[in-house]
Figure 1 (cartoon, helix red, strand yellow):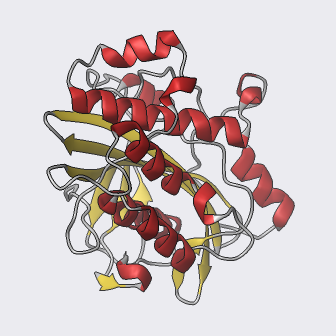
Figure 2 (tube, rainbow, N blue to C red; figure 1 turned 30 degrees about the vertical axis):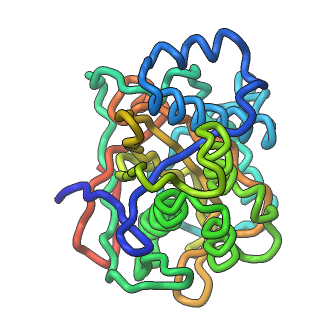
Length: 294
């Protein structure tokens, strides 16, 4: 078993971003600027602001008064409908500090592993890799590929195309989708304009995942934690988390209707905070039937 680098849409790579840096507090900017390199500032400010903006939009201020979600180990059972699904999606996750996505020492805590199916390698709509099984772990694999396709291109147009092809009606507008706002924020904060600079290279690697909750065999909320690496005049790495409602329709996992889930805790993979947040280390398995937690 291994953890491959995700590449999509013609084997391009990945990245993430932020929008109006002026809205950041002085303290946050000083924390980010400690990274020194230009690309570190772009990447960390970009991703950090996207996470900050997403949290504000989805409203997670009650995270200290409600039970924090760290993932489930049960397999899908009976479906209970919309109210149950909204409850699963809205449950807050572990609050983490602004510097949590930055590289950190490996944790001594045992986080466990998540076996994620490699799939069949089919090319699906909008050139997104598909062919994953009808399991929550299959939904994890599909979400990671959706994110990789968008982040690797760093193109708002590609974000719209992918979201339109992979999201069921009844969700947010394409421009408000978490991954699309990340692309916009990255491009705005870096000054690259409407597309990734020709001399920039970005890769994304699936590092961890969790299953937030299931409602029947055809619906789940899952989260992926990606390790993003960027080269642009220098090099930098950061963690980037994303949760989505996913629904099995027409033989594939798609982004389900409803309000976006509470934002994923963006942590450095393998860190103590990652373990506390419930992230399980990603392990790819060649099985196309089921994955699993250990």
